[in-house]
Image 1 (cartoon, each protein chain N blue to C red):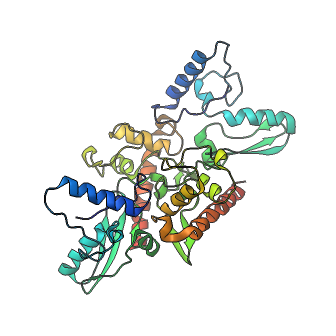
Image 2: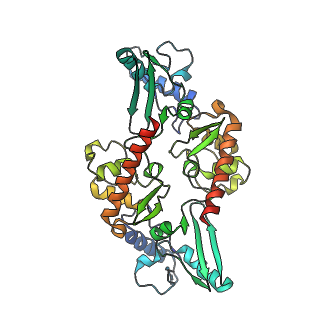
Image 3: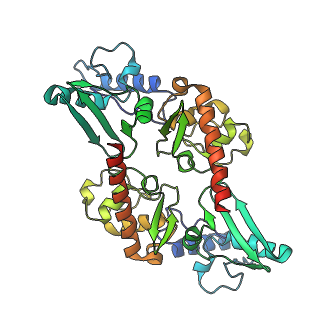
Length: 206
Length: 206
């Protein structure tokens, strides 16, 4: 069992989050639950379990592959984990991994559009995107046909539909506009620029 | 009467938002309501009323001051409006004002911290802030003593208190850390860097 989620708003600190999540798991299963920490199953402090999901996959891959770079892009974050001679060579906490560039806080779907693309090129001008929760990368990918509605596995920013038209509306809202105001072509250009930029960030991080 | 709010999630487009807000105002007052658009009270299309609040203050200032640059920083956005010979010389829609740099989408309080400070210098390293709704500029200003709890006029990101300790916790969460993990000194450094950066962005925009 690996844990993430201890950083959620409802917990005042990671320890409280971890203990609450562990208790919840133990209540839910009638079999013993074993938790994996950054150093494996042999942990002493629950804090070692904080966001250690990447370390389970990395340890497994270490046994299989020996030397490699393990890149795991989820909906919200991307783990970039160096594995040397079967050993996971990376920082242990989210904070240290963020500082080391081993966790890039962007994912394929849930990431806010303006975090990837602070400004879009529109008609030769650089137009800043509003730093509001107006659209996500899922909208960009859906608009471009890279994912289907079924693969849109996160909530929409405005609670509206996961269809193409709603996604285009959300993309337009990022520059404080109605879709009719800027047109579908511009909304699509924003989507393309965001996806291209995300790829560049990923390549740079690797 | 001026209107903002038509960009809110609950409206599918600006026209729907404007008509709904106008109807709401008319229901609420037993006296006639006059709405101000980007060209004043003499508007024909409700779309002229969209986010025209800045234009009322700018028109008033134009009469008083003649030539000036009107800078109005609110909780969420900052308007930078050139006034020449008493006339407001600026684009009319949010989209065009964003493109022209006449609306800078950042404010004193409600703006997400990571939108102002994408990465903080901590211990000689550049640590990216998580692009989540973890903290706002209000937390930075409260932590630094620039505003009191009473002036913290927006919601907190996590729904927790507006006291200093809660603000410091939210600042730490921006780098995926507990406050105990990075310490108050680092949380304060993040706050200082965010406020300094916001000032730089404002100066640059002007």
